[in-house]
Image (cartoon, rainbow, N blue to C red; front, side):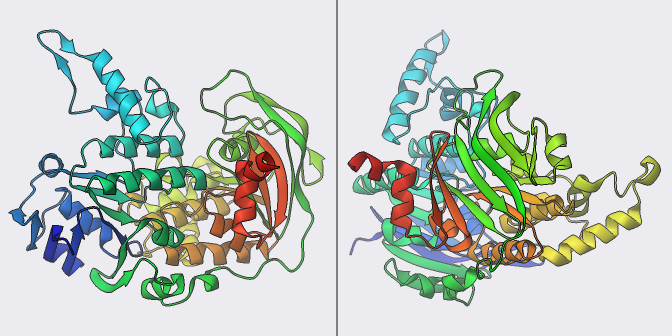
Length: 508
């Protein structure tokens, strides 16, 4: 067995009264993928931030290739060959891909400023090495969340010569894109790079990792082989098996809430990378959860945003009916009046305001209701906030806490609470559990089923096939803006993947 390329011993860290790391030991070998699992707040991101030079430890020792190191900044960690792909992407939306890849490491020509041609040429090579085919002249702000994730991966690969920390690298990727990433991971390992792989997708672990460490409450609670049964890992994480996270499916359906028949959306102007819905047929009834499956670029996100009026200006064609009546869903206001609500896939960018409190975020959707005569009622705001915190078990249970200080799972609960305070008829969900730990996922699933039991209908797009299969009553596969097949909940994941990718059709 090779000597560890990285050793962390007795790492301690406190934030005020919170003991985030309690004497953690962790190591990594050359060419190894070491999965690090834990619920939000378990301490895994804090441990990796210590390694990446973002925060200093209070106690403990870090060794790289046997040498004791102390990183005062991320730049010092990068200089030692340690790079990080963060869950919340560190990209500048107003700059193009090339500028983001070289930010802080720009290439210069002697006495002539930036060497833009060389950077663009090398940017294409870096993207190709990461298996990504996107024009490097496109601005980050024009890319989808999944495409931004791929750019962040390409950026980190440029600096990881010894250790690469991957924090939820597949959170916004489809199954096909994730498989491509796994190929890149294997190529990195073949070059001797050690990889710390943080993920909430337990099904990925045996496909990518060599061993697994599980954290809870700032401690290591288990070290397992990558082949450990998923039920064993879930028990270490939350104390119950994975299949118990999904509540029973709907026993009876309510009235039809949404019907699309050969429906498509034509934007007023073309938008690069935006796959417009072209030919979609589906229905959603009260009391049921309908899933949208598809690879990146299938048009799932675009369908949901167009239904909510949050896409580019344009017009619908074909048939679009809400609650049995033809609907013109061309603005957010029109969608809200029709009883639709939307949980975006980018909670930090468009789902919540991080610098505002939980209370202020929650009541944003009902300002008119709690503002008689144009003045907000503090009593009504407090009552709505307390009810939402109680219903969604938002932690800590305080309305005055800034949303930016919450874990990813609790931020997502705030987004749900905000949208559901309006008491919509149909809830549109785009990657509703992205970056959310297993325990919080189970809470969200249970809450969704409770709501559908009260007559709510749900249309959900997810890149996690186990989530679609375990949660949904029916699943619609999409490809290139079109619905191509429909399956019952519980369908075999392989069948669903083949339909979404078109593999089965091509083989035939």
